[in-house]
Structures are given as C-alpha cells and as structure tokens.
Length: 103
Ligand SMILES: [Zn+2]
Image 1: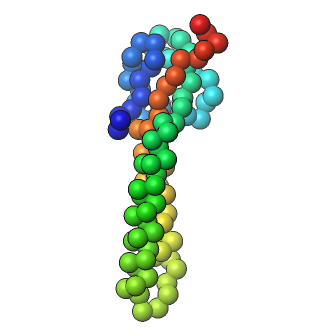
Image 2: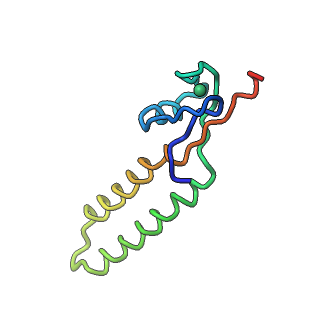
C-alpha cells in the first residue's frame, strides 16, 4: 500500500515530484506511453491521515500537561509539523486510474 503510483497502461513507476504534479492536474498523459490517466487519492489516505492526527492531539495534550505557562507557539509548531507529514505522504496514497473516455 505504501508505495508510489504506477501508470495503469504501461506500469511506469512515477517519481515523488511527478506524482505531486499529477495530483494537481485533472488529466494526465503518461510520459512513457502517452496514454491518459487520472490521479486519485487512495481511500486509505483517510486512515493514514487519522493516525498522525491522533498522535498530534496526544502530543499536544502531553505538552500542555508539562507546561507551567500556556505557550501556544510550541503547540502550533507541533501541529504544523504533523500537518506537513500528512502533506508529504499523500503521493504514497495515490493511485492512477485509466481515463474511461479513452477506451
Ligand atoms: Zn504509461
């Protein structure tokens, strides 16, 4: 499950940066076989995003319980880091589907 997507036509493995680009575009053309496909984020991504979210909330509560004074900046920084992790793993939860109109 935790791998980068491949072209549904020719099986070319897409690199991380190319996958990010494919998610932004609605219609994609494979650079290898020139056929069209669509990028779809895997439904498992919701579960994948939930785990960091729970960890994030748990870590925030842990920080809060340790603090003598309420400092919002560390809490904000921790949340930001977790959001960044979720953002970075999105390409690993993306699958390429054949464009139905083509066939
Ligand atoms: Zn291809």
